[in-house]
Length: 168
Image 1 (tube, rainbow, N blue to C red):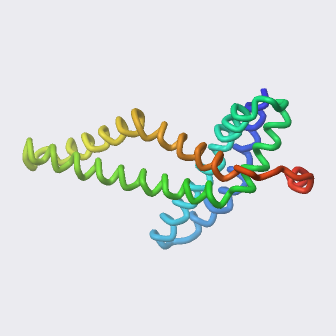
Image 2 (cartoon, rainbow, N blue to C red):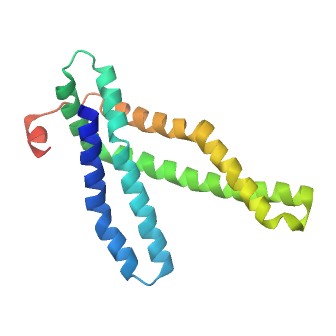
């Protein structure tokens, strides 16, 4: 129940933060600025959508605490260590974009080398299929492990004080 509530709150926070960005993206006519805003929206939503996994890891590590207390403390510590986590999210998104490009073009070159120039669209589809396979089999778990590890490493030695709880 606690994580269901947390998911709803997080989803609303993401909408609240990304809505002005999406409005700005619609207004600005410059395509490169639109892409940058889309990238920022993706990073923000990714950052917030992994809160529950990180808090769950915190609860798992701190078994001696009450679940509700551990969720509160886990949230506070997540936001206290936001810089390290956000930097890790940016790295992950850049690696994911690089992997997509690598598989699209690498897969395209392999298919084009085997079947010749006639396979243009099929080559891109093959590369995208390789990326999806890579994402499902490997990278989705890797992303989760990276975020949880960064979170648990960043909160080592940090304490939750009353002022931080009040801000939450």
